[in-house]
Image (cartoon, rainbow, N blue to C red; front, top):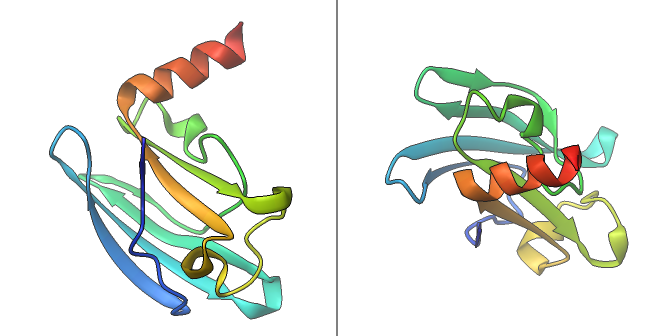
Length: 113
């Protein structure tokens, strides 16, 4: 698991992240003030495209797509508060992490135990 550190307080931003296996995933994040929240407006990995997912505290936001992508995305926030402010990621109040394929498998096994 590694932290996505380049998230700023810009309301719209696109990141290209290199995964542990060397492939690349592109994520576009937007902050929607009327919803008090951050959203992945687009996640693209090869031919897999996922749109409009709210970013909330979760050990793996992509759990239901674990058979389609070899990685996961986790979000954790201080005091268990959801990332609802535009500066939450840039201030460190909330953090995003990329999970490896083995971490995705471990989490799925934990849920099924």
